[in-house]
Amino acid sequence: MEEYDVIVVGAGHAGSEAAAASASLGSKVLLITMDMTKIAQMSCNPAMGGIAKGQILREIDALGGLSGLVTDESTIQFRMLNKSKGPAMWSPRAQCDRIKFSAVWRSKLERIKNLGFWQDTVVEVIIEKNRVVGVKTKLGIEIKGKAVILTTGTFMNGLLHVGKSKIIGGRAGDPSSIGLSDQLGREGFKVGRMKTGTPARVDGRTVNFSKLIEQKGDENPGTFSYLNFNKKQKKQLSCFIAHTDPNVHSTIKKGIGESPLFNGTILSIGPRYCPSIEDKIVTFSDKEKHQLFLEPEGEKTVEYYINGFASSLPLNIQYEALRKIKGFENVKIFRPGYAIEYDYFDPTQLYHTLETKIIGNLYFAGQVNGTTGYEEAAAQGLMAGINAYMKLERKKEFILSRDEAYIGVLIDDLVTKGVDEPYRMFTSRAEYRILLRQDNADNRLTDKGYKIGLATKERYELFRRKYKLRDELISFLKEKSVKPGDINDKLDYWGTSKIKHSIRIIEIIKRPEIRLRNLIKELRSLEENVNKLGNLKDEIIESAEIDIKYSGYIERERLIADKIKRLENIKLRKELNYDEILSLSTEGRQKLKKINPKTIGQASRISGVSPSDISVLLIYLGR
Image (tube, rainbow, N blue to C red):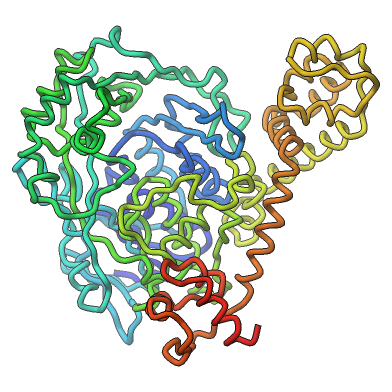
């Protein structure tokens, strides 16, 4: 076979973004997958985004990745979560048509000129002189490549559990990938074992929806991609809320002894923040009910996903417990829930580019690094794809800092701290979440994406126009005044104090009770100004209001970020011998040798490296 610049192994969310990024930038790319009909398959719930994950998806889109565009084309319900909280916590979420999502991804990948496909299983990476030079497949084919990105998800030595039944597989209906983790373990990589799970899928025709609580999408649904803000979503499908009760819990407890999670069969680490239903019953034994979400799998199917009821209990117990839930009395199961164990690599064995420290030009992305979630995987795939291209072209590595993106937080956490459970992104993991909002991802990252050649000129020009108009609107609000007679009645109605003399409109907007959209309806001069904004009006209004209301907080957080960032500018020599620095603590020395951080800033975030260790390093460096 012909030789490639980049070979991507696995076509899940990480692999799809990695292949698209490298090929779009100019590399000759081969995407290898076991099954070309399951590209970017939604193996678990049929949704994208959510708390912190929605921010990541917006960041991927702002850089020029494809996940946001694919999500918009397959969305069947859109909701902005946490609207009752401040804008730093707002998180978009989209329920997707599972089949359409995969089909749209494949269609977009097939339209990329430099991207080829091969359906096969990779069993080995070819290594020469401590550098990867290609892969070997199950068919016995050797394919040469200058860089390889492994995005194998849950497939490496995957093992499925349903009660006492064990099935070798990467997910239901698909085989495992055997050989890769064993080979890389022999090469010196630290290999671990993790587990995750998924709930049963049920037949919607057998559910009594009248007993459930309907959960509709937003009245004015948004989109994920910044290219689609002026496109309205079509009619949305509803999700539904159900609850367990003591009768359900009693049935689950009856089967706990046959659960592989509790009888010693599964010893791997599972996700603490997404526990199985049997975990919930045991851990939260005082709770009489747990909330479940019944989510449609697509626009033209009766299959539903039961979010919150992941389980590896025996099939008969799953059936019995489900049928005790109100509305599920006659439910039929399409597929049982199951747990899956799989191999992963300790992510501290990676640089921030996601290239491995042990083998040159070999990159890891996605669940293979100990993460969980489509969005976390896609973000890693995007960054690995970009950096593989950059290295082959001898260009500067592309790394995002913690104050620039949730993607930066994600990767820095992985390579600096490692994982002791499947890593999931939360807003609480980011120190600068007022800076890292879902609404301003384009302002933070589109210029960067455009400069490296991934974000298109169309996207860049749209971004520039949006913020030019936003700044013009803010300038107008700073300059234009409003008189008491024009606004006092409404101020009283909105629950805020009246004004005694003319003041700038921007001072009114700073009040927490005031929404800019409401003010626009009441002030004709303001309405005339806003109507000039065209199809970007809604996004500009939101951006301007957030900037005005939270300017003090944003500026304060930026100053803190800049102060802490100075530590990132203090480089540590690659050949630094920590054994010679006797004043370091024993644990600090061990962790510094293991991680080999590039900067004082990274060193300060390593678990086990104390502030006194950082002081010792600064003195040693003459700072």
